[in-house]
Image 1 (tube, rainbow, N blue to C red):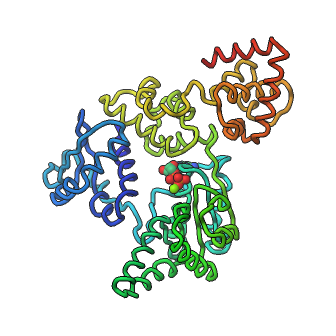
Image 2: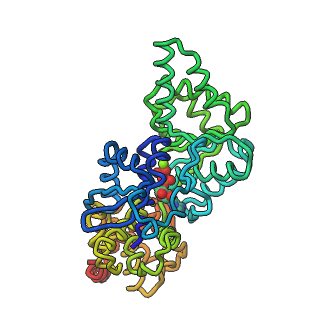
Image 3: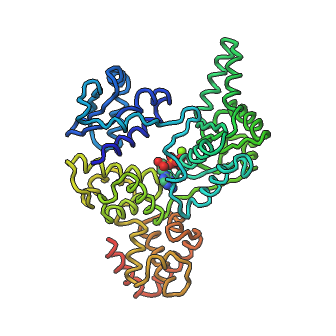
Length: 449
Ligand code: ADP
Ligand code: MG
């Protein structure tokens, strides 16, 4: 099945683990050409690559590849010199530049392939306005939300857009890299009185038009670096240069960050990305499958299974698709069906919601039981014909699935957690007074089990 897809996912991961130059040199021209029962065959351009990868990166490649594919493969490196080129290699596809190194931007992350839904619409729109008018719209733009929800993707998308359409210098950096650079110049200046190092640092971070700094929460414990970042921020800001920041929490919750930095983050625009609802998860699954040309291979049932199981995070959706493909490949190109998907993902979902007790499943079953639609359950309609099934479904999610209140609210069409509490209380009370209701809920629970 799709070896390119597997390998692309592996390379994506590796690119975040090695330096850009190492990635470009050793990995960007590699290709997965065959999977045997326990051997993955990788082609490399020349013998020297084979030697270097084998001696320096074999363990890393195996680890990442096995993580992506969910199995244990050994890696065999085949140099193109050794191959009968007409036979296997599609040389056109080799050597596509992977990164833009000047900016550290990953060209795979664009606005075009960012799927928009309720939970990220605002973030997406503000990101695009900033990309169109850097320095003029919202400065700084501060994007926050849990891991795996697309913050990094959006930031690269902004950078790629600016790079393509405007003549501006963009620099993408993680806060860890910023800290490392800063520590490096400090060591240098202490030991060698190397003032060039300071100059270089300043040029790197201040002589730019757009600074994108990812995962600022890691700067929380680095006091001296914060000081330097503060200076960098001020310099850029006062020159109307765009600053884009991401974090896994809001500025107010970045407790260890200096107040003056937090205040500055509040000057611009704060945007929050929330976990995707069912509809967006389905859209994302379709997009990932389609863009990899695998649409016909994935039955609806498997897509639904993934959408129901990966509730909190888009990264997990991608990982699950990859795993299912890998598993089918390993089973000698078996057809993808629900049994195969469940088998392939059994480790992934072990600590997560399973298909049977996910919120969406409850909504499906309750909706069917009362002959209303899922959409109505998630709507704001207050007629008792719809409100009561909705309250019962919320009650089951809370009392029987022990789901968290905000998550229930979110899955029920973005309701506030107080609405959920109110529903749960109401049904709990009614059950005590009305034995018929209690019987009815037991019937529904039977169906869910
Ligand atoms: P974060 O930085 O918030 O932890 P990432 O930007 O790294 O998350 O996203 C994790 C993965 O999910 C990436 O591969 C990204 O492309 C993908 N992703 C997240 N949100 C979306 C989306 N709305 N549409 C398409 N892909 C997405
Ligand atoms: Mg990120």
